[in-house]
Length: 232
DNA sequence: AAACAGTACAACCGCATATAT
DNA sequence: CATATATGCGGTTGTACTGTT
Image (cartoon, rainbow, N blue to C red; front, side, top):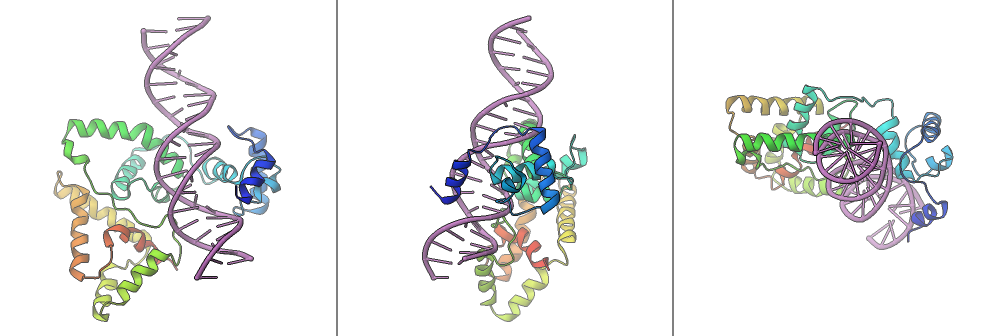
């Protein structure tokens, strides 16, 4: 048993639904000390909860940034589209929906959209549900993740001319416009061909990448890469 | 009214990754 | 560089609530 687990075991942490009193304590603690340092939060707040529980409660329920209530049609539309692109990367999807948490979106997806989409698929073309999901590798956007270092070194080892081409074509101006253009591109293609899937949209990008012979797995981490490269 | 089934969502758990020592 | 610790994520579970029989 790790030290952390030992500590949590000794304290006899509470589990289950949060009470109003606990919420107040947690809120006061975050207001006083700010977010982060979750390990210290139970102690500071005087809560018999584990750090994870505190963090989750704050991020998914107490944080003032959270918007509650029904998902609008626009939001649902966006979730569906982003899920086509990203798969179950709920935190990334949530990042594009201000005020919505990854947990909310995940729950909404699992309880509403899976059924809805399944029925749509059955009604239309059953094959349309087969799509390749682009999975960015890192779960958190570190400035120097190992997977990126490796990939970058691979790129750097290519002839300079090639690098210049790649960066010129692939590096976005900023994350927002990059996402917007990505969605716009998908939208455009959908309009052009109602039967084409998102897979086809990205096949083009993949071919472009292959044509550049960068030797990197662009299809796997292109999405996150765009965000990382634009991070100051 | 009681029993049961289905649904929605809050919360937990295990794991991967980042960061500190 | 190796190890320990902290953080964040996605999958899954538990349970309160609602509708149906």
